[in-house]
Structures are given as structure tokens and as C-alpha cells.
Image (cartoon, rainbow, N blue to C red; front, top):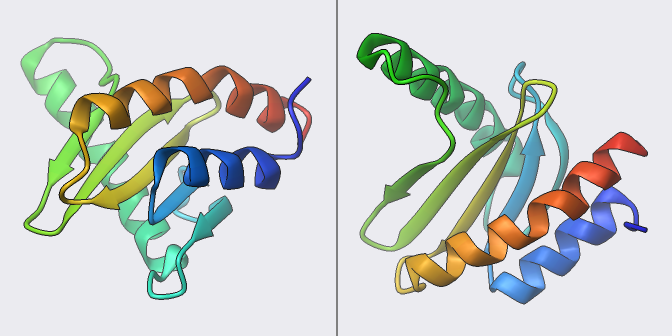
Length: 121
């Protein structure tokens, strides 16, 4: 049985070495977030919702269906957006030196527990 959403996100943040993990609603408001003090979770959550819209628009334009994941690489950060059920998106921010394969694996393994915590929400 999964813990609370906060517990699950805190565990994911620690296990993956993330600077931030959050579940964001389609309206851009964070459902829950765990982050370092230097990150503004509310601002990033709003941008994550825009990112989800962008992902869906590109998929429709290409006639390739819904996006399953978006990975944004910056000079000093790595951001992963993972669409979830109920128009939610999981957003993870990692250090730019993080191993992308490991980041994706950690997130993939955490998705069922996050979904269970959301269902109990």
C-alpha cells in the first residue's frame, strides 16, 4: 500500500536525487510537490501544465497520439514531464549531470505508487 502522496514524492526525490518532484494539475496548480528551497514549485508547476499542452499539440500535429514523456535538457538541469491519469503530470527536476537513463528508470518504477497515492487522495 502506498503512503500519502507527500511521502511518496519525498521518497522519490531522495531515491532519485531530484531537486524537485511534483504532481501538477491541468490548471497548473501543484497537487503536491517536494523541492529544494531554491526552486519555486508553484511557478514550475504552472509551466509544466503548459508543457503538457505543448506535448499534446505536437502529438496531434504529427498524428502520433498522446505524448508519454517529455525530456528537457538544459545546461545545468534536466526536466522530465510524465503525463498521468486525470489530466495530471509528474514533473521531475534533476541536476544536469544526472544520468538520463537512471532518471527515467526511477520515475517509471515510481509511477504505480504515485498513481495509488493519487487515488487515495
